[in-house]
Length: 434
Image (cartoon, rainbow, N blue to C red):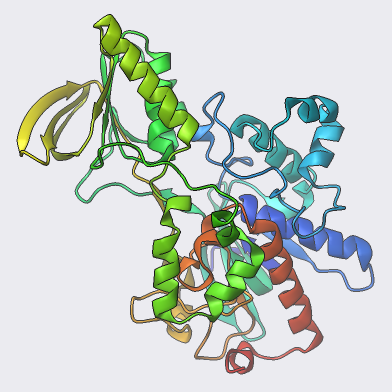
C-alpha cells in the first residue's frame, strides 16, 4: 500500500468494470447530472480492458441479438434518451435503412458498435487498462486500489458498484490450451491459426455452441465439424410473448418477493427462455445442411447427440478425444485439430475483491451474497457506504440478472437508490436493518 499513489478526491460512486451494465449506469448518472445540475453525482469507472469491448471473441459475422433493440441501454427506463439505439442509428445515418430492414434484432456486430458509440461519449468517467485489485473500508469512505500501467493508485469513493461480468465455464477437469478453447475466445484464436483444421469438435448444446458449429462449418470448407452434446438435438428457445414476460421489470419484483421454493420453480419453468437453447431458425439451418450432406454422400457436419466426452488428451496441435454414445456406452476416439468448449459462462465471484469486507456481508446457505431489492449487498456490520452488484444476483432477482433485458431499468434503480441514500446520509449498517 505504501507504494501506491493516494488520490485525495472522494467520488460519490466508483464502478468496477465497464461493460453494458455499468455503461447503462454511467448513462443514467449522466442524464441525472444534466437534469439536476445542483445535485450532481461524481462517478468514475475502472475497466481492465484497454478499450471498450463486449464479448468480442463471439462477434461472428451475421449472428443476431436475442433481445430487441428496444431493450438497449436506456429505452425501457427513458424512451426519450439520446443514448438509445435509435439515436445511435440516426447519428450514424442508418435510421431509415434499419426501419426498412423490418427487424427487431440487430446483428451482434452492429449492437457492439452501438455500445462502443455510447461508451465513447462517456470517456471522461471511465479509466481503461485499469484493474481494481483491492477494496478497503476506511472511516467515511472506501479506498480502492487500482493497477494501471504497472503502477498502483488508491482512489476513494463513498459507494461501490461491482459489475465484474462473466467468465468462461468449462467442464470439471477440462484444460484450455493452444488448440483447446472456450467459445469466448473464438474470433481471437481463429485469427492465430496458421493452417486450416481438418476436424473440429464443439462441445455444448446452447446458442453459442450452435453458432460456433455453424461458423466453423462455413469458414473451413474442408473440415469435418462434430457437435457433441448430451441431448438428441438442439432445443429451441421459447421466445413466445407470454414466456418473455419473465424478462419484464415487474418480474424482478415478483421474483424478489417470492419464497425460495417459488424462486426455484420459476427458474425451472423458464430455463428454456435462455439456458442451453437455440434459435429455431439456426436449428433448422444446421439440420438442413446436415441432411443435404447426407444426400450428397459427403458428411462434414456431424451431430454426435446423446454423447459426452469421457477423455481428452491435449496435444500442441490439437487433442485426442474419446466420445461416448450414452445409450449404448459405445466409445469412439477422434483426433481433433481444434476443440471448442461452448459450455456457457458464470458470473465472476466478487468475493476476492470484497476481501475483509466479506465478513460484514450476509450470505445464504448456498454461499451466495444476500442482496437488497435495489441491488445493494446486505450487510451485517458497519460499512462506510453501499456496495451494489450488477450481475451475480440471479438467486435473488431472477433470470435477468446477467442479461441485457433489464439493464436499463436496473441502472435507473441503482441510480435512484444512490440519490435517496445521499439525501438521508447514514452508515450502511443502519440501512441494512430496514
